[in-house]
Image 1 (cartoon, rainbow, N blue to C red):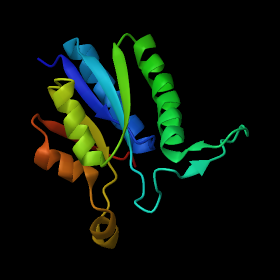
Image 2 (image 1 turned 60 degrees about the vertical axis):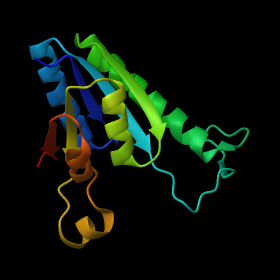
Image 3 (image 1 turned 90 degrees about the vertical axis):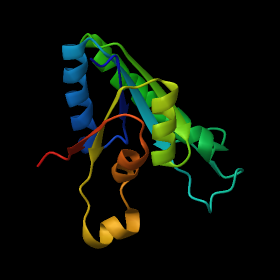
Length: 150
């Protein structure tokens, strides 16, 4: 039924749980997984903001550092899923999480999005909002939201 399943990942336990469920669905349906991480840069960080990586050395741009770090994490996760027999690719992008997740789903022709939701309520939900909620509203395909494991 599904050939491509998109799995947004923010490197949380909740996202790991969603990725494991997506893996099981992919195995059952013979689908491939596409992992996506969206690095959201605070507006106060200008395009020239830089950091010195933990390894020391030459300062690099915050945006470059965020993408490199995300790519390294996604490579590890994709390799583990691939070792379990699930074809997995990944993409790391900068931008607004919900918008970019929907854009990647369209670009990759995903037929399902499987993502974690932190289940925030009250003030935390009001202030932070819900990426999953915005994706559900705007995605062109079904979205399976997975709450964090208790």
